[in-house]
Length: 325
Image (cartoon, rainbow, N blue to C red; front, side, top):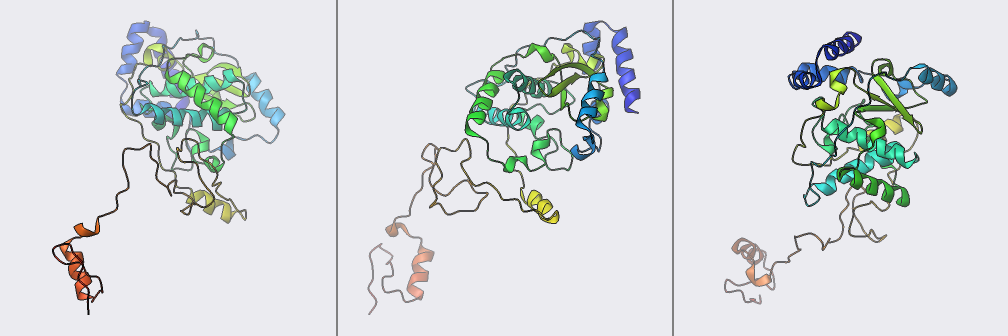
């Protein structure tokens, strides 16, 4: 069914001028858009992608020819103003994708990963926010970016690599374009061979990652027309399921409670709070302030309770202290 869909898309694009192809893509109903995503995901998880012989996997990937389609150009991404309250959240999600997917890749490979994320933001087959794209399917067994659903987020980022990922994420959100991957919406490491590698258009390989585009009009630059969704939300990942999964496998996984990038209050060994709680002390850079009620402004109900319990220092209705004999 998915191969038929790919053939249909390729055949359609060959009959339409670029402007007409863009209009055709704009008219794709939600079912067809979902089909585009299903064509490259299905129920195949990372364990099913692996090939016993890594060299064999690389050979099979090399055997897949590069697409003969013209390399499409993407415009600058400028959907989120630097002054927006959501810019920092978008950068956080994009930096996570860069770090956990390609921290040890060359800079060009990391920029290419960022380009894929932003390409998806602008494509109607995917969520229209950065965090929505990065965390798509994060609460399921199979997700779009494996680090969001395999427990990788439990690993504390290495400071220098995380700093670089944040810088590259900011560049991408500010409009930096990685032209080598064009309209790529997919990539995978060269040591795995996903089924969808044979249905998409192979563009190039950068480092260990191989990049692909949709076939036909869905992969043309004119189809990347959608604007940013208007707000960003960083999902709260439930780490319990990762811990339970490790426990069932007989291995113990320990949450790294070290420094979390982005906090303005540096953690201290004397802090006492839950492992998943980033609080514990007041962050004075926020707009709220801790307030302690003035004893003379205690509510009537509280004063009545103190009086009924025979407290030695119950508060009188006028705010003074009545001493019990």
